[in-house]
Image (cartoon, rainbow, N blue to C red; front, top):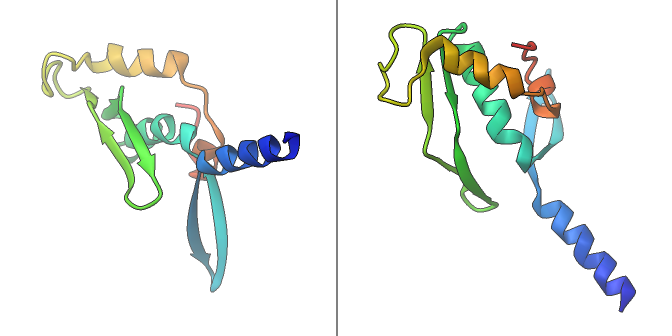
Length: 116
């Protein structure tokens, strides 16, 4: 019975990983990403890709292997004008607050994101 429990624990760990393929210079490799890293890394990525002008955060969602991620309830902070994206847009203060608590994870590093 103990062996069966160990097998179940291993299966649970696999459910927490996202698998993706990447091809670089003709070589395909399998990437493993911890599902829990995705929302924080996505937020960090949005800041990077907008050159620090916007940040999408406070996202919630679910992962399933058939459809991937369904992310909902985003908050968008923008340097352009506070409340551009609704009442939850806190501008620079919102962006700064995110980076006060954000700890870069393996996916942030894999994406080459700086420390904010």
